[in-house]
Amino acid sequence: MPKTSFTFKRFAVCQDRCAMKVGTDGVLLGAWAPVEGVRRVLDVGTGTGLIALMLAQRAPDAQITGIDIDAAAVEQAAANAAASPWAGRIDIRLQDAVTLQPDAGGGYDLIVSNPPYFIEKVACPDTARQAARHTDSLDFGRLTAAIQRLLRPEGRFSVVLPASAMGDFVSVAFRAGLSMERLTWVHTKAVLPPKRVLMTFARQVERKQTDRLVIEQAPGVFSEGYVALTRDFYLKF
Image (cartoon, rainbow, N blue to C red; front, side, top):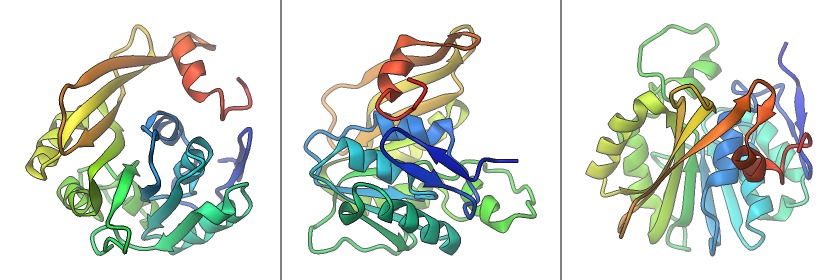
């Protein structure tokens, strides 16, 4: 049975009402996304609010907006934000990225998303989990079009996806006017091919940075890079 809550060093995440629970993908994105100089952040598909909370911890001057189309998730994410040290800087809304309009601030400095990525039309009895995991509700084209509209001219967009979806996503993002600035291949173990990719996009890119992150060097032995990336959050580090 999944844990109903997950405790980090500076905040806790209740997740009993959310279709998608706290997972490595979200932690990686929340710890990896670029936050230097950001003042306005949008988390698309916020779920439990995990990534919004991580970014609030990492960017002390930023206002964070988290949106989701699942009312139960929004209610829980709002409660998690309210119980955190950054309650005054996190706004959780029941909102679709496709219909969200830039406010008076003119757009976001950073947009992040751990989006749906299963393209196959696989029936799932849990409709909330189906929407969270499958691209039926937010395919790559609709997502990148929303990002292009909501991102400030000098802003950045960061996303985590399965490695197998990288090529398709990059092509769709390019058609939306977004070029890859940084790519990190994520290997669960050093000897295995990458399972996930972390990507940052911008409108103007001078050069692309590519690197890799290994989670475990050996069974139960986490890599120095993974520990360094997540030590501000995980209790075990």
